[in-house]
Amino acid sequence: MSNDPFGGMNELVRKQAEAMQAIFGELLPDGEPQIPTADAEQWQETAAQLKALWSSIQTQQASAKLPFAQMIDPALWLDFAKQWYAAMPLTDPAKQKALWDESTALWQGVMAQYSNGSMPKDGEPDLPRKDRRFADPKWRSHPAFALIHQTYLMLAERVEAMVDEVEGLDKSKREQLRFATRTMVEAMSPANIPLANPVVLDRTLETKGQNLVRGMKHLLTDLKKGQLTHTDPEAFELGKNLATTPGKVVHETPLYQLIQYTPTTPKVMETPLVIFPPWLNRFYILDLNEKKSFVRWAVEQGVTVFVASWKSADSSMKDVIWDDYIRAQIDAIDHIRDRLKAPAVHTIGYCVAGTTLAATLAVLAERGEADKVKSATFFTAQVDFSRAGELNNFIGDKQIAAIESLTNDGYLDGRYLALTFNLLRSSDLIWNYVVNNYMLGEDYPAFDLLHWNGDVTNLPGKWHGDYLRDLYRDNKLVQPGVLSADGTPIDLTRVKTPSYIQAGKEDHIAPAKSVFKMIDQFSGPVDFVLAGSGHIAGVVNPPSSGKYQYWTNDADCTSLREFIEGANETPGSWWPHWIEWLKGHGDKEIAITGKRKPGGRGDKVIEDAPGRYVKTR
Image 1 (cartoon, helix red, strand yellow):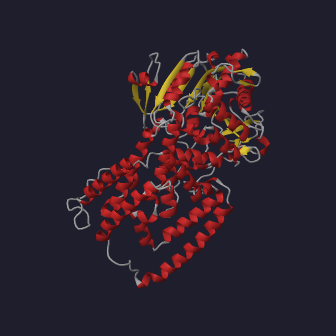
Image 2: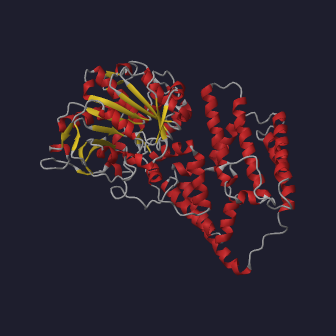
Image 3: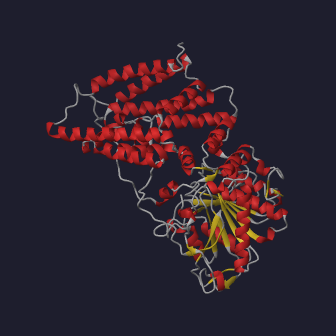
């Protein structure tokens, strides 16, 4: 075996290349493609445009110290590939022979369906593997492209299966290798290579290369802003067609603004509701537009709704830690109670803000102030991180040190976090847009959810590091008294507040199995609901959409599997189930007077919703 770490795989690739060259030599037309004389001048102009743009891209990439420029750095991927290859059992001659034999059988099976290098006479070929990246008929219209994508899918299956054959790895290391393998395999898809993608080739011929010119312009723009663009940046404006529910900012601190929404019903529930969205993202995921807005819907149900709008971190927040977010939640609760002369509030915590809400409830319980919160609802939130899913791939000591090295002026640029979440679904959120934006040169769609996804929020560096170490890596929150906040020890078992816990069946950020474990920590009554779909669509699912479903189970279940086995499925949104649960806590309805309507006579407010904080980058 050669000392070259890629020796074994190089030999396999060489054999495959020779075989495919022999096949394609018979299938593809002889000679160089001929460009019509009438189009030659336009092609030359396109070539000149591409050359100029490529020079600009190289200059921009060399000077950029931003997440997106780093992601497309070839040196980074080569180093990553070498480390990955060293861990995988690819140098085993027996495995190489088996892979070669399977490749040959696959090629023969595919070629047998084509006659004289063309589409089968009886219609579509019956190819063994299907994938939506290759759904366009052009991938099957010619045997060359059929062989390319079928070979890739076969190799992807085998390489990903090898993760289970690597010896000497504990469970967490194996999952990290599985994630790394999938990430690299998705990056190597022939769909991402212009000369191997028939859809891109056809578009290039059709537009005489102008698709590539537009694509390079898109790439240059993204390099300058350090972030992949998913949607038309000019299509949305906060307060105009996003975050449009009427309301006022009634309170603010250096960490958050508190928004109160204007009532739309003659009477409202006596107990107000405060929503704590994750500070990793902008709050308006819960107020995207009139049809999707959870905030607007809750207001229409007769609830007095408040939302915390977290400030995107800057250098002034370099010393912000978890204690500050817990103090902020308590401050919001106290301000609302004082403002409306209400004895208690209902609360919602979404994702990481739900984790913090659980700690806040524990702190209040320890201080004898638990009665300030009448109920707590958790959207896709975790407190026990032992089964926290794919984000656990980023919590090793080396990964945490690398993340902390990116912190600048006391905060972590939100574009790094956006890239991390995009990598969790890189085929859908990265490579799909690389093909559409850069290769096909397509115009950006106007999609509010993708606009929100790209509207990043900076994080306090010190707190982010503590969060990864204390919660994800060391799982301290479920260890009574190990963590504290504002001088008060945190013991989740002291929480007796009635709780409604919602999880997403397909959530890859806060897996349902992990969310379910919250039940084991609280001492009070808990209602668990499993919603269809994932981390976002499973939450933002208004009744009017008629989408998905949810599952309930009144039995005392000890595991998510047991819950599902005995659950009742209900079509549609879980929101009506939640509002019925909320109103079941003895709330009476009261008339709208005084500060129940923000900005009324004698009410001093700061500004209109959605406020300044959500607009700062």
